Amino acid sequence: MNLSNEKLIEMYRKMLEIRYFEEKIGELFVLGALAYARGFIHLYVGEEAVAVGVCAGLRKEDYITSTHRGHGHCIAKGVQLNNVMAEILGKQTGCCKGKGGSMHIADVNVGVLGTSGIVGAGIPLATGVGLSIKLKGSEQVCVSFFGDAASNTGAFHEAINLAAVWKLPVVFICENNLYGITVSAAESTSVKDIADRSKGYGIPGVIVDGMDVIAVYEAASEAIKRAREGLGPTLIECKTYRYRGHSVMEQWAQAYRKPEEVEEWKRKDCILKLRTKFIQTNILEEEKICDIEKEVKSRVEEASNFALQSPYPENEEAIKDIYAEVEMSF
Image (cartoon, rainbow, N blue to C red; front, side, top):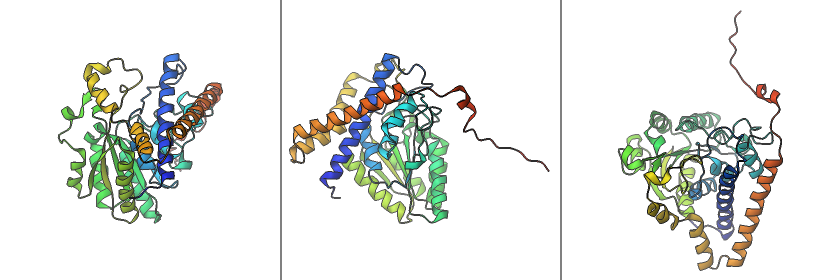
């Protein structure tokens, strides 16, 4: 699959946005700026190629469901940096008015149906969205991002089974970063390759290097095309790695994985890999790459300042935008 230089540069820029954004969130946490941000914060540093490679193949009207580690998915799909940053800090200007926080970000205007603090919760939602698309007869696609541990939940199996039976336009993206909190996937999962589980449902299962944004883009684009054509879902397993701990609160990361392992994966870094390709193939000179990096870093700083200066919601906001089922009797 031939990618234009413009597309490659766009993907590089987007990976930088996510990397610098997440590093800034980590910095703000250390400085205490997240003191009023309720809930845990899970950083996506290291996994940027997955979100960017997949979302680069989607249209604005397509949908995604996400995870507790969802900032990268949101940014890759088009949620504005200012609004994501403000939401994480619990501010009124956040995309959910500060009510969702890090683990419950949504922006239906760009097809982000929500991150989720419940492991695997977005998988059946994606199947439901796929059913709605099929009933409407539109050409949309829904992508479900989830981690390796989520593939061990009942929701994973039930959702993929129905999507396969009804040939729904859903692409299931497993971000296998090798650990579910502190437990190695090798110790908790019955198969070496999660993509092999696709065989039980008669759908394609693809393994891809999750540290290579081009490889992810090519695999995802093929699955998205298949889904649009009414041929049903695909399960893609992206072998990737998170550099940070499970959450920003984690202090025991080295207790369950060796520093050598982390360093080995960092040598495969997705951003470094694409940067090197630009230089080796004369797509961009190093000076131009540095200009892009400075520009993106500046925009992340602007988003941080925007969020820090934004107001917290007023007390009365707590009872607004609430929906409840009301039982009617006649």
